[in-house]
Image (cartoon, rainbow, N blue to C red; front, top):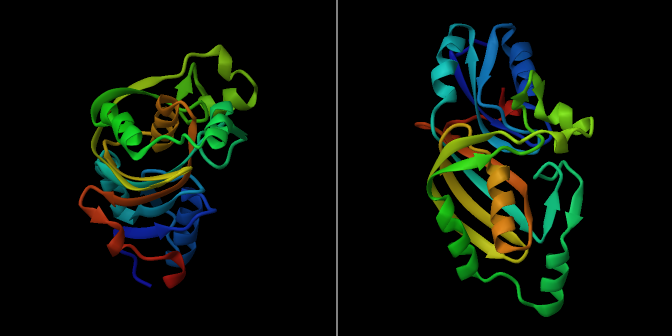
Length: 221
């Protein structure tokens, strides 16, 4: 099979972005393959592979704006801000459930306002950000997460829209700058609503001008 320089893949859940690269190496029998922008194992959607000479184009692609479909579970928190961590039901969630006073759609819309535009975002504890040469998730696994200050970064969210809200699940469409943590966004929205939240599903649908509709599934090769 002839290999294109850029390949758009619809990554399935349950595997890493590097697993996709390894699969492409076996399919095309080419070692020089990389990807533009990691997706966590639980996440799905658009992953751009650079193959052979196409790897030179990846640097400029990594910095492009992206669009995601994200579902958050309100009323609980996760140590990793996603489904892969330890899940804890929040006390406020239990009170909400007993009183039937769940956050209204208007309350959710109000909470989203502060995240439209440019703001400073605190990285998740479990992230690849480095502090003194060590990745944050390595420190967290050693129980040292509380001893360091979480890194912060200016990010821009150009589009933030509620697609569906039925307690406890909130589905959003998010268009944002490169480097924005969607699980941190879910965490912060839950904090602002007073009930906690973590990301349960994430699907990347766009990177710059590249769209998921043009991507192929791995098993189609």
